[in-house]
Image 1: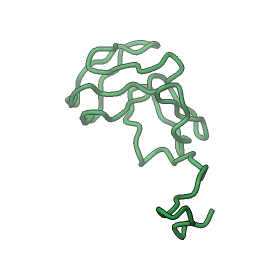
Image 2: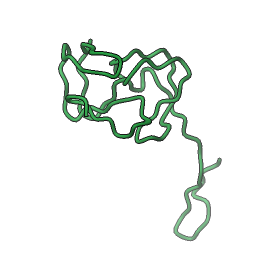
Image 3: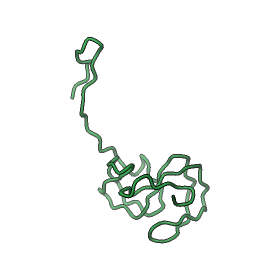
Image 4: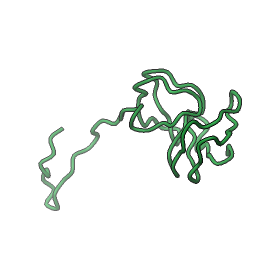
Length: 104
């Protein structure tokens, strides 16, 4: 745990807010303390350290997206600076076992 943020898995490059955190809050990160430049809502993420453009974002030790811009330590990590890395892995089925009209 890092103050109001949780490290969910050692491989993660994000921390998750365990409560809403005010702008100006000082947070200790692995490379030193930072001051939040914006409020961070409950359950939202901040960068644990600098994340490069194109780098994979990890939460729970699993990839959840790709950085669409450089993200600096302590910055909000959300849909404005990551894109999904998910790909279709299964098709939905109706109760009778036929395709529910989802094309992969």
